[in-house]
Every structure is written in structure tokens, then in C-alpha cells.
Amino acid sequence: MTNIPHIPETAPFTLEQRAWLNGFLAGLFSQTPSAPQLNGAPAANAEPLLVLFGSQTGSAEGLARRVAKEAQQRGFAPRVLALNDHEQANLAAGGKAVIISSTWGDGEPPDNAVNFWSWLNAGTAPRLENLQFAVLGLGDKSYSDFCGASKKFDLRLEALGAKRLAPRGECDVDYEAAAKTWVDGLWDKLGSIAGQASRLFLSSPNGAAHTNGEAATISAAFGKSNPFPARLLKNVLLNQPGSGKEVRHYEISLEGSGLTYNVGDALGVLPVNCPELVNDLLAALHCTGDEQVKIGDASVSLREAFTHDYDITRPTQELLLAVAQHAPGSELTALLAPERGDDFKKWIRGRDVFDVVGLLQTPLAVSEFVPLLRTLSPRLYSIASSPRAHPGEVHLTVSAVRYESHGRERKGVASTFLADRVGDTDFVKVFVQSSHGFKPPTNGDTPMIMVGPGTGIAPFRAFLEERQATGAKGENWLFFGDQTRASDFLYEQQLLAWQQNGFLTRLDLAFSRDQAEKVYVQDRMLENAAELWSWLEAGAHFYVCGDASRMAKDVDAALHKIIETVGGKSAEEAKADVAKLKSDKRYQRDVY
Image (cartoon, rainbow, N blue to C red; front, top):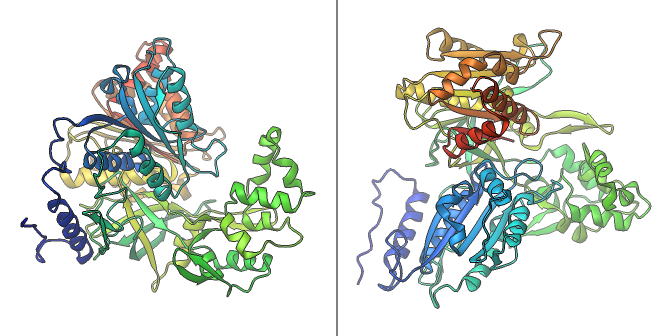
């Protein structure tokens, strides 16, 4: 009989974590001798399998690593690489590859897949007739180019002669169930070892574990599917009087959760919908809120479902089509024509589910309406603290979204939940999302250049706190900006104190509305181009956090220009230099 190890009660884990670990060990050590070990060397005859990822926030990478673990359970010899490491993958040599990628911006690949996409489209791209591949995309249906990057990868690989193992998969924001279904179907195509049961299937430690092919229900450690109910310790407005913004600093207790994080990680917040919006939607549907609906195996009131389970702000494509069908004379019907795409984008901006339902003369029945909604998904926020500086706590820097549109007041779901409705008696459900890459340099002597205007300051506050706590000697340069210095200098006292004691080597500020001509962080970069170039030449790592659609693109353009003008490089050479910075993980972005 196998002697199965267990986690002792004195180990530094919560009850839930200990239960999960003991269940995992039971499954691992009860394997038959012929089964390939999860963490051991693969069997000698194991078939190689490439598992490649393109990931901006860590979701696609985490999923890829879980697929690789299951692949090893099934007798493969998996190798996990970022798509930018395509040279190591040697795809031209053939074999089988599973590609899992998110989409960034307007249908663009994530940063760690940009070089891969350029390579696929280069005139020197090789033929890939010996490669068999399958692509799974993670996306968000609220964007027009849903899973755009994975679509491009899939079609381009086919154009280069590669053979599909399976049709491309596409997952919306709540990707876990859809991804599991796609991967389960993939194993038959890959020809996994007959009779080899998956002990991990595809779940993280937040659900059932499989041991010897049987489901064993165990207490889950806190994570995405079982978020921790945390106490909000502080809610502080960072802006001063006269500001046009509402940026708040939150301090959240992780006491008793067992959750840990590293600087650069994100905190997932499971929001609760605004009760006023819930009431408005119930009235539009002619419902009391007491109607019962199914959430999984449970039956809950419609009010409860609208409050905690469904996204009642962003209308799905399915809801839009259903409303257009029931209201053929509405303006929406014409706007959904393919040639009216730009007009539709303008129309839908600032509108929510309530606005769309309002186009109907007779509301949809609850049984028809509810399946047209998407699940209320967690929001990810860059962590603004170092666990070394604030043990047992996690800090966030969040801008509360409030505006008026089409005659109604609008509120950001999670940002105003944190600002208005999490008080002394309520909890906020949270989990940690690892960044898998957006980190300070491993070597504390390495210089850092950080560009983080507005709430983009969040991870860099964490970086600096971490470096201070560890005694790192590398130089630190921060570019920060906002609207006005008097009202919008976030974390002013802390940053100026760091600057005065020399810990923050350089602090360059860009307050856009403090002078007639607007000045932004990219302008400050160009003003200090020679020194910035010298820092890069000395091995500095370059980081950007903030708005992806404008700021990050402008900063990237400024970086290219600095390399060209100060470095004396051509546009193509500058492009290659930036690509090298990314592949060397010296240029990292946390953009949204």
C-alpha cells in the first residue's frame, strides 16, 4: 500500500489550502506505477507537444501551463513557451503545437506574441507543412474583433501550410468552462494514451480534484472561482478639491485568506451591481424581482441574479439581435447591418442593457431574457503595494467611473461598488491574478524606467516599495502625469519623499492642464531622450502602465523615436531594437 504524504496541521496554510493540498497529494501518490508522474520526467516514449501562449494579463499563460500539466498526465512531453520564443519552438521542424492566446487592443496580439506575428508575416517565414496545430483564443465579445489575434494566428499558420488538429476555439471573458470543453475535445485529436485519466482536468485548485478517475470533492483554496471575502480597511480619495477626477486608494485585508501576491500581480474584484440599476431593469421588464431563475443547480430570485450573477451593463450580441428581431422598426435593427459597423459603435457607446431593453414595446419574458445576458465577471486591478511593506494587506488605486449619457447617470460597476457600497459591514470578494512577467528586474542593481500616468502609477508604487524593502541599489526613474499638479498628483508625499532621499533617482512630471499647451509623459520622455537612451544602454528595464488605446501607443512611438534620433538607428533598426527589448523582457507593459 502506498504511503501517501499529507500536510500537517502545523503547516502555514489555511484549512481550505491544507484540504486542497492533501487531496492533490492523495491523487498524485495513488497513481499506478505506469502512469507518467506530474512533476517527474516524461516517459521515454512520450510524444513531444508544444504549448505556446500569448498572454498580456496572465490568463492565457496560466491556462497554457494547466494544459501542459494535463498533457503530461496523458503521456506527452509538453514544452511551454511564449509565442515570441518561436525560435526555440522550431515550428518548421514539425510536430504538434497547441496555441493559446488572448487579444489586446483592437484585435492585436499580446506583447509576448508580437514578434511571433511579425515572423509569420515576414517574407522569410518558412513553410510549415510538417506542423500540426490547434488554436484557442481568449477574448471579450464586447469588442468588435472578438479573439482577433487568435483568428489571425490560425489563418496565417494555415496559409503557411500547417495542418489543423482541431477547429479554432473561442472563449469569452468567463473562459474556464468553454476552454475545458475545447481542450477535452482536443485530446482525441492529439491521440492521447488510451485509458489515461486526467487527474487535473483543467481546473485550478478551486473545484473538484479527480483521483483514479473519480471525482473527490474537496474544500477549495481561495481563487477565481472561490474568491475570498475580504474586509475593506481604507477608502481614501487621492484627488484634491478642484479635480475633475475621483481616484481612490483602497487598502484591503487578506488576513485569514492564505492569499499571497508578488508586485506586478493584479487583484481580481468580484463586483456587485448597483441596486438602482437593478431596480430600473426590473421595472423595464415588468418584473417584481421575486421571480425565480436557475444559477447552476440553485434557484435564486431575479433580483439576486441581477445583483450578483449577471452583467446588466454591457449588452451581448445575442441580446442585441433578439431585441432587433422583436423591434424591427427600431434604430438598432438598421445599425446591426454589417456595413453600419462604425455607426453602431457610436450608437452603443454609453448605452447599457436597460437602454437596449427600452427599445421594446413589450418586454421579453424572463425565461427568454436571462439566457441573453453574460455572467458578471471579475475586474482586475494592478496591485499598488508590496507585500513586504504591507504584510497581510493589498492596496489598489482605482478611478471611480461616473458620467452622464443619453439622459441617464452611468456608473462603473466595480469602481463605484468599491467607492460607494463596500463599507464597514460588507466584504469585497477578491482573488490574486499572477502577472507571469510584469515584474521588477530580478537583479536589484538593474535600473528601472517606469511610465505610469494617472492610475498607471499603481504597480510602480508597488515596485518602488518592494525595492525599498529589499534594499535594491538600482536607479529608479518615474514618469508620472495627470491633469493638474494641485489636484491630481497621486501619492505626492510618498513620491516626493523618495525623490528627496535619493531613492527615486528621477521624477519627471507631466500635468497636461497646467499650461496653455498640453504636456504628456511621452513629451517628457522626448525632452530627456539622451539620458533615457543612456539608461537603456546601461541595461535599464522599461515599464509602461495605463491606457492602451492612446497613452501606451504614444509612449511606444516616443521610445522608437528616441532610439532612432539618439541611438542613430533607422526606423527598421529601432523596430528591431524594441522587439529585442520585449523578447529580453526588458520592455514590459501592463495596459488596459
